[in-house]
Length: 327
Image (cartoon, rainbow, N blue to C red):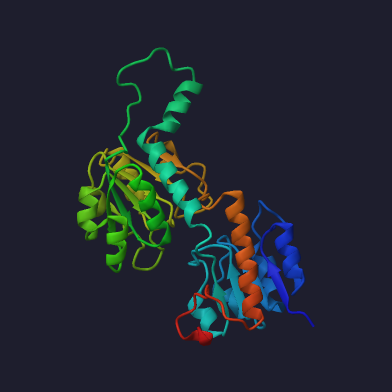
């Protein structure tokens, strides 16, 4: 008898058909509506595997209902919405989808950097509202990117990809990471600095570190006081790493130049959020990996992870602690 799995969102039909060849598959078949908590609480009681997104809270209460569950495959790199510790206690393997979204997320990171620096959104709105009456020497002037100093906080795969892009703009590249990476320094021509030093020196600061208890509110009031008045902050990692109240204060009080944000403490972002009132903020709705090819690759990898784990095969994308389940 085939194992049962539940998919919490509509996925490409080819991916679902692949899964049907291995499992009995049930899905929440909507693209723009998260599975209701009550529905997921019922569905998880009878399944061996779960393929989920960041929109679901896979917490202790939910896992308590999952008496048959053996594997959780999240279609994302981050997995802070899953209680991995509780899953591990219950013998449930958790996997993610690293690697396949690296370049696409780095593209968006640099796109936000450029849009804020050159005031692209402000300029478009200025034109659309009929305010462009004449060419003016200092009209909508922004910050230069070429030759500027970039500070990367978190030198993982995406951090490295952003650094490679910055090399094309002849930028001085600084980085801060939990562990220093000497080989990367040599290969990429980048410099390691302690966090406070990086904040003081960088013209652009890109947040690319995972969300953990250690990185929660990593950038807050004190950190904004260290930054240059011309500094631009970009966050394409996770909401909660940047304290949004502190960011709003820094932008309003002109402690920094601007910000580009793809992630937020609360998602979806409320329409009345104070940051949306500011002209020097460019925002996108958590689309870092949102290219067609990359999202299909993510869904395919999430499916493969589930097939591997429930089939008893080894898998490189298990995120449970080392030495768990033979990792």
